[in-house]
Length: 106
Length: 106
Figure 1 (cartoon, each protein chain N blue to C red):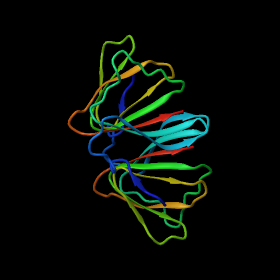
Figure 2: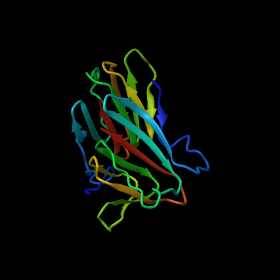
Figure 3: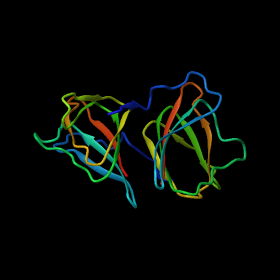
C-alpha cells in the first residue's frame, strides 16, 4: 500500500498556490491545496458548478461569502460545505507558515 | 455558513469507536471516526464494496492487510487508498489519546 502524508513535500517558497489532485472518480475530486500567504485576487470570486466540502488542516485562512461582511477565520480542523454557486473568496492565508487544505468537489 | 471542527466534540471516554457521517451523496460517504485504543476484533477483516480513501489526522494506528505480515503505522497526515475488497484490519489505535480519522467511501 502506498502511504503518503498530507504535511510532507511542502515546498519551501511558493509564489503561487499549489493544487494537487489526490483522487478523481466520476463526479468526485479530492484535492490538497497549499497556500503561502496568497489570497483570491481582488474582486474575484469562486463560483463553482459543484458542492464543495473544505477542511483546513494546517495554518490559517480567512474566507468570505458574497453579500456577507464577516470574514470567517478558519483554523486547523475547521470544515464546512460551500454549496454550488455560492460565491466565495479567500481573503487571506497565513503569512508565517504553509496553509494546507483538503477540498472535495462532489 | 456552518463551520465545525474535526478535533472538537471528542467525547471523554469511549467504549466503542464513533462513526459520524459528515457527507453522504450518491455513491459518496465521508465519515469521521474517533478511536480510543480500539482495534478490529481478532480474526475479523473489513471487506468493503467500495474503494476507500482514509487519512489519519490525530493519534496513531496500525493497519494490516490480508496476506501481509507488516503492520503499517499511521501518524497524522498519513493517507492511502484501500481498494474495494482489499481485506484489512486495524491492529491497534493509540491508547494515550483519541485517534481521529477521515474516511471517504466512493
